[in-house]
Length: 95
Length: 374
Image 1 (spheres, rainbow over the protein chains, first blue to last red):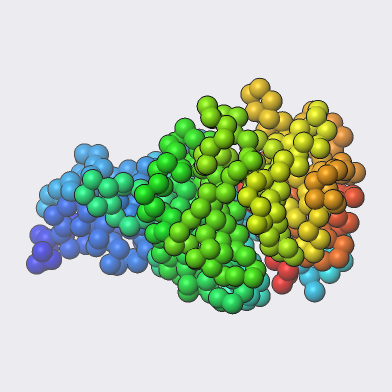
Image 2 (image 1 turned 90 degrees about the vertical axis):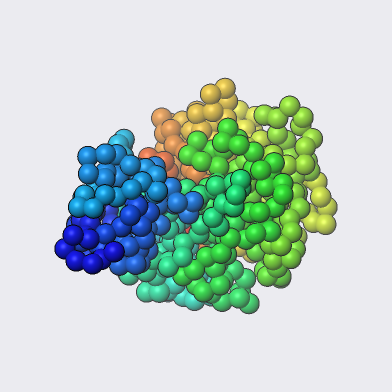
């Protein structure tokens, strides 16, 4: 992990969490094997952000959607292949 | 000394800052625009300190704390959350923090929080970190007490009305919608249902120990053995050590009824309290009966009630006032304040005799609270 240019994952973040990220909308993290590890790495870098996106039972929150490359993912044990981009977006409609 | 009203809405919080005479008010805000704010509560033990329960539509629930009267806010580092479920255990997650209550005067920095689903949390560091109250949340009968989703309110079942006995920090009452009223005399380690005498006309057996639907419960600060309750099924009073609630709402006019959300007590007179009735007929519109909003006040502990609607709209006003959206200040005469589901804030500086509008066009109001520190 984290052994150089090949071992990185780019994570796109929603504006919803800009208070945690200092406004950053995308970050480069050390490669992570699973989606759960991506959230753990985000938490280490931006304390507090994981609980806003993932509940205490390690489920992605109802109105948060995650894409690993082109695939929608919800389970934290979903694999994150090397070189893929992860996109975290808010997904909510209504008045 | 000025006074502040915190108005928590579905889409942020606003502040109304009033002068000492409570005559001139200035609307400030929004704070946390776009975020559902369920409750903002001032700490009477530490003037200028406030806690705010927040949930953006997309994100998880949290609590913020201010030490400068609401000008700046810091998020809890460990918001209320259930412990991880064990193997085969219940995987519960806090959907939102609904209710905040400062702890006892002898315990500065202690706070209680009620959530949806119905659970109780406690902080001992001013709201920075929160712990699950296991005596309640992990009680073997928790599932029976709280029922299932069908027993909850439309936006989720809630634990509310956390009341700490001013004589005893370990004596705590809570209300569950649904579930009923529960009492602890050991700081939350053990709990006893206290619902005798309360109607539950939505249950097959009316005389059950729990499963009721209290909307708002208040321990009277000047006589803590007296509780008032606005329930889904009427208005009640309980005088401890008695254990049977008395339906004092029977004395309300029959065409108004005794359904509502808020329950507000006079800060000094144990015989005086207010309710704000709503229509609980057929489809439960939960609007002002007949489109004519009014507070009802008793000064004899519920034997008789007086309608108080001077200044309020006389017709075609189809509001609802939610359980945290009506409150009183501690001044003399007592000021009353309420917020409506259509974004209005109303006040009375004369104990309900006359009302005036302080704000309109805000989002759906969830809670109104007083900060005596201004």
